[in-house]
Length: 212
Image 1: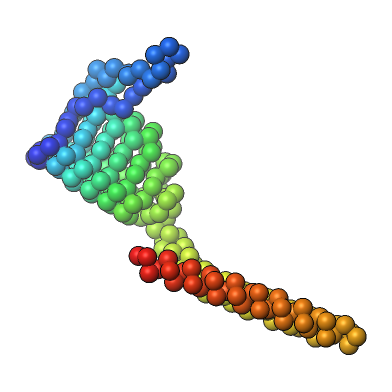
Image 2: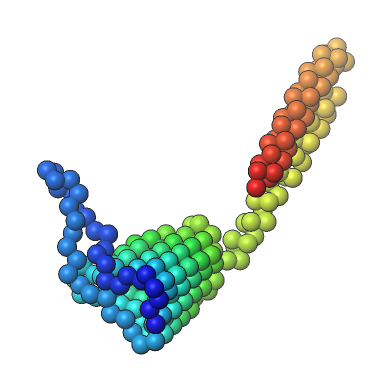
């Protein structure tokens, strides 16, 4: 099933550098070979190979606006959601699921049974079955943990600044009595500066959140 606007067999994005002519288009003499029961969504494009064939395996389903580069080999039962892009000469084995807006670099190999979350950026081969997410791609469990840590950075920074203020105060209490007043004054000035920095950071974070 091929929906409106799909282009199958367009020239691949391949050029060679010529000293006189600049970038010269590389001829693509290959074909695209579709397996049985393949669905191609609206306005999706599949580039033909330089030589040989760009292949799409049986029962593979492509959503709208999917781009598959030249020389790719897509396995059986693969699902690609909208706006997925697969770089040229990549190999995606059977039963792989690619979430929306996932990007695959060129010459990548992904084994069977891999699932990629939306907007995942794959920059290297994936040799183990499982769930992946993020950019660059990582196991989905690690990515979710990282998102929790990133969300706590403002809170942790504020605590760190509080510890810095406490350390300055304790250091001022440990000096000799002759220098104590001068040290306390300096410590108070530093504490005021740090407090103002915290306020500026919190204001910036608030403005950033309000912008979204």
